[in-house]
Image (cartoon, rainbow, N blue to C red; front, side, top):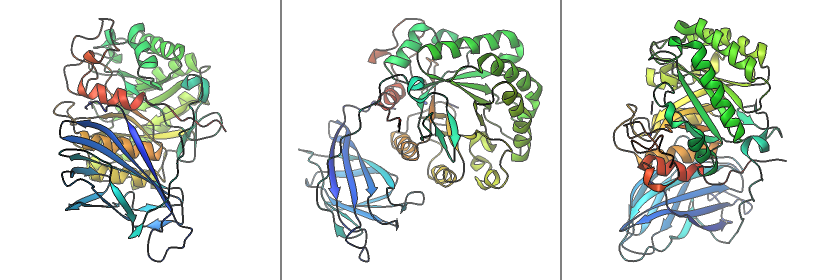
Length: 456
């Protein structure tokens, strides 16, 4: 359902490595490591370590480096198994990243403590071989234009979301809360801030079906969704139309409503390049075969009006690919929806869903087109404390896999998942740091970094 702490100014030191991955590797094997301090505070810091395999594929890796100051300690790490003895730090690959193909990347990170100075680590080795050399590769300049101007009509190619140049892209954005409750949060000023200050690629429009939503006023809610699609389009953002079914969990309960709604919005928006259709939010308490049956009856309705729009279908266990029901991605891999230009939704809440969920996502990403249409930085209730380490591990993994995401929630709801402090919406200021929650500050920092949309 719904939810960290602002990452401050980032600087990066890039160490180009021409070392072998293991004792049997040839001299041509090598890698690049980027060590980045993302934020620093009194006595503490957060750092990222990005490994890029420049040589032959490897299965299993161990990274070692030395803390140059005796006061520097790893407190908590992610995306690897971390340990420290004296000044020596070790990170060992885990299930979802231990195999690195040529060009493959593993993004690791840790939070640490220090006393005195905080110099960068030294003496990096990979599988016991010293890492030497230097490579400085500046990031490519971002392409001018809004996300929709650059990428145009999106489509699914293989397991990726691809742009008009048939190249994989990652969209990063925010989800509304229920528009029946927080409509005041989605006016011209707030969407200007989302597009221009947050530099968001997309707006997920969460239209609840029950809970005082669509079923109470189908025409009125359809018009509200269409208006937000237009507002996103005017600002160059993609609009993800979310048919937000939650209770009851069987989407077939709302089959007739879904067919009516999607026939209308698809016909009205078919000529737009910015629309993506999410036809079932979080199926729960229902089998995958029932969800698949629903999807195969709704998708033709969309296709009849909009043959080019990307469609996303939720998965079993609150869109966890079945993990929350004790299953895994195999049920979808072995029995996929009979449709094209289709993606599958995956949801997580960082404080509740950790390694087993990340392992499932990583495995599934090589077999299925995935889109994280909703995630939070806190627990699955939408409340509680942020989990900085887990959220960072998740976002690093999504970046690595080029999986698009929308964070819950761009609202001032009285819950720690909200991006804005209560009372912000309707006040006109959506840009100042004082209106952001800890979760909002972290997400704004991640989303507002330049996109790297390929155009050739």
